[in-house]
Length: 225
Ligand code: RET
Image (cartoon, rainbow, N blue to C red; front, side, top):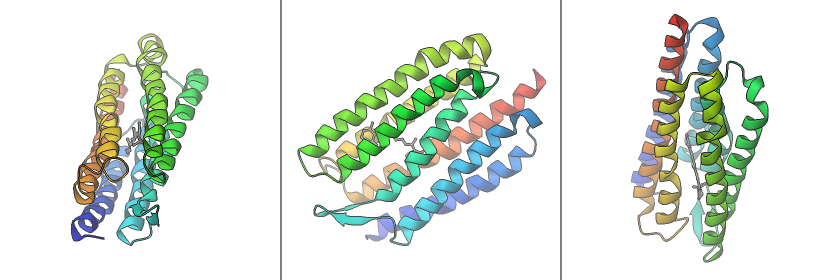
């Protein structure tokens, strides 16, 4: 592993750990009914912490089809992205029970997206591109549900202002992942593995720690309503 890649993994587990401490401290100020936002944010960063640590220790990759596949990214994403969607959904209805079916569909499409992405990363050209397209279809389903039915729920029964803000943030960040995937070692290798790992690092920290901070801030304010 090159030292640049190694450094990005080390910064990754440290950033997730610091995010965990930050979320733990700010969760204490949440009103009891909003503690669930803190639980979600902490779970996300601690799962990412473990996966970044595994990659830093050289336990998160395998050499397959002539290249290194960092499978720990996918074991991270397959757990954390459903929780991210659930934390967005917490702003869409007063209880998750009211949107259970919608959330289940959202998570099913999301898990499908991550798993087919991993299959693509384990495939050589041109099959990796087939899987990218299949994974993108599922991603489109996720976006359609987030901006369609779930948003309508937020208007009727939830908190539309934080919902819109977080949905915008989620969309802007998540669309970058398939682009990095395509440009990186899983796709056309236009960028180096070092650049790829730094791009994923910035995205992961923003999509987890940044997103969680915005969500917790909005959850704290909902007390005064
Ligand atoms: C893959 C494979 C290629 C096609 C698509 C992908 C989407 C990945 C996404 C990942 C999001 C990760 C987050 C992680 C941490 O918080 C799997 C790269 C569409 C959207 C938000």
